[in-house]
Length: 181
Image (cartoon, rainbow, N blue to C red; front, side):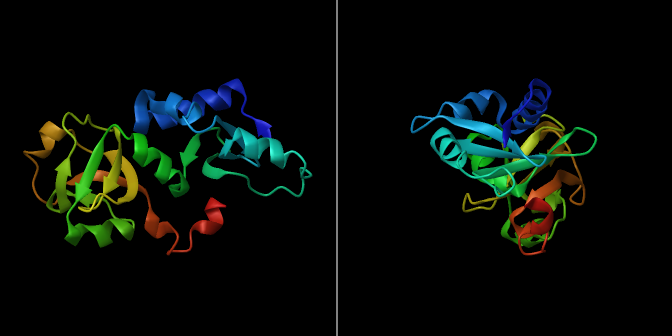
């Protein structure tokens, strides 16, 4: 377990800023306790400082995970968010999309959200912005990228993609957790 390098921190913050904007500071300087990011085997963990200090007593080879896994660095150096980051992204999300009950299962099976499944969308969402997908009960289902801006969505036909799927809570059910952990 080690702190992130300058380049890794920049890459992580760029990816998080796509979804939560300037609220990254709120992730680190929380009111209850300070949090930090740590790297274990190409995976980035979001850890409270007290838990991080307690984990230093465990041998490096014996420590598998500590805190919440936000994602991992690929071999090419890019950062990929995992669905385990959804709890923190959904709290501070800039852009949100709500899907109709008929489109929930399709999204949870890994499909994109079409205009026919779109219930609501945050105003002034730009194209290719990171969005968090909610059901009508305000339960976060996953996240993706806005394929179209809010203004352009009004003129689309019903089968056009509005949100491109990236991750959803159905990943656990489909057995993708081996890649996550």
